[in-house]
Length: 526
Image (cartoon, rainbow, N blue to C red; front, side, top):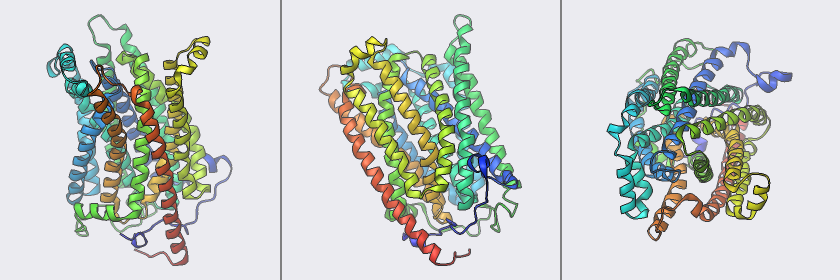
């Protein structure tokens, strides 16, 4: 597909509202626009709340499960999450031909919230019946090659693995796909430059709220009577909140359709997106996939997502492995992850304000280059400490610390900065790059690039980690840990960051070229 033929709606000629002082920095939205911006930001809050909550829990479940560890994450992402993402992509693309966009949103969200509710109240309380005994799994791991040590841990904790899969897919399918697809459909570029920053600002409060709530409910069970599983009580409270937030999300989504998109000030099309079936395109999924693969524009967006997923995965997995050593108990690990999320939310609030203003002042390519540059610098620092940590033992002991504690604190600080920058700049610049696509490719092109591209990114890091652990495991007498393959991972990390920066530069040139064409010719009316 030639990108110059795309329905490019980056309205460079739109007049941005004029704001002054603090409002220009924190709240560049007209009062009448709150009818559209506020409910969208609340949906974003709930979606991000659920994503952050289940993401923390999936790590707490898997990393601290019997006979398991952070090493299991690579095998899960590659051999279970990635195929599940492909299956979802196929089903979603087919459903998009049958259902209206509104019904498609409900059909996508409902299975997730039903499962998470069932996990807290039905599945987890019956683990003794559903899971094989921990001693049985330990015997399997002892009797088979160490190459299969971590995959056998997944078998022994299969319901945790299923929770992990759906928690991972939530970020790709509900957050990146369903929400942002809806936002891209109903927001013009002139609105997006202001609204998206506002969504991000409100969304960061979800991180702070999740961290506070997660830590509170992880501490409540300390006073429970003997014989009551503390983590089970925490889980029921948290999954109950996830279920309620999911239901509220659907209610507000419906309200937007009936009260906002019927207002000509906010949506100027003659019909709501996806309500009428008479103009449905005949472009099938496989044709859409072919278009995506052969489109340099979409390919570069996919490259950004893949490089981000791969690079952050290489850092996070190693960091969580060190955190497991400090916090082997599930509730303690969840408290640690909740605090990490709270700190991320606080830092994100600051960076979102800065990023929102940078987005309005800088060219797209400059704003988009900030994230890979910071990941390159922060990741390089973390890997350097991991590789040469033995040289700092005496210094750390003199201040009452040790390499593991320092690695956890350093890794958390770096990841908080990187995730905050991702929320503030990477997500916004990536979503703005989708706006040129026509309606068909906004649905099918985005599902392929976001869902599968996002999974390929994480699976790419997982492939490298799991392959190294399996190959080395065949020749090892003990289980291979992530710390053992850190030198190889650091080299891969540097290459991925270089490719990411190159892709940003190339996509920036394409956006500038299309913008120049648009400025020299009248915008085509639909």
